[in-house]
Image 1 (tube, rainbow, N blue to C red):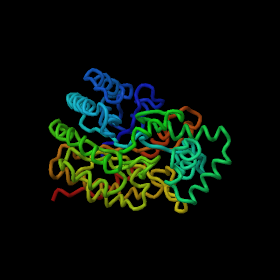
Image 2: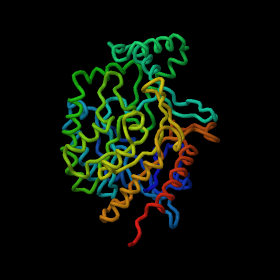
Image 3: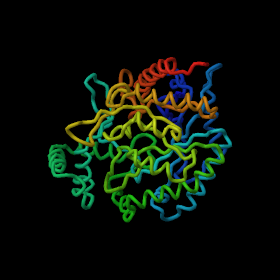
Length: 403
């Protein structure tokens, strides 16, 4: 695998030099300063490439391997407003990226909120801090803080009871913290919201059903996937995080069935997916190694992380260590390596699949520093080291003989 880390640009507390010292050779980044829907110019892309290449040392180049993400404008997801122009702009951005040699583009199709957690500093037994999604806390936010009309209908009676008890126990400071955690999104989120304007944003999705959102995705891909194929760009959709509906909004990339539906539409190889073991792994029915075995040909990017699900509280989970949690990383990486060897035998140009250690605990010195939630340096360094060790062992075991 191509070992990468995500970098949020010049303002990221984790520098490119630190990422390189962690052992990564690739960078996953985006032009976050360009508004959603606007064209990424060749000059801006080149500027970012030069920033990344400038820290390379002899014999150890640092390359911009993956764009994460070229945001999909909300109008495209809704199929409303100026969505046709945003699609045309997306095509130009892909063309400009291809001209600068960047051939893997990640995106998502989650309405309004890209990804959400209720606690960004969930304390682990060893004192490190993790990301946490607590479903009753999210319900308390939805029903009692946001006061979304009809919100209670989306939760069963037991979850409603627990949400009410939680809300009654929270101080004003705790209410504000949960609200900020839900609405700010994780680093790289496309939008940031306040409680006062959020309901109006949700209202814009009235009439956009699960089927309508899915069709809008297929229509979008029917426009851009053939162009991506011509340009040699691999498109990688990121699964829903968490992988179930939130705030009355549909989710259409949560299960293996969702993935099959996507891959069967516009069946060209450029239209693929990002295999995020944390997002898919938060849903018990998703068989992670099996998903790689069955769909690896269209897997263009990999996020490796492991979540620990709460068996007593469905839809609640926290980010575990990369080799902890519920994901069997050895089995998963075994299947990824088999796919890489298959591609090598067939002489594919993308034999090595870009991978990044997704999220990481805040630990050691980073506990005293300002860091992006989930993207501190040391927690990801630990994760990358563990994953590299697994891959090195499996590479030796699984490598085909010359005979």
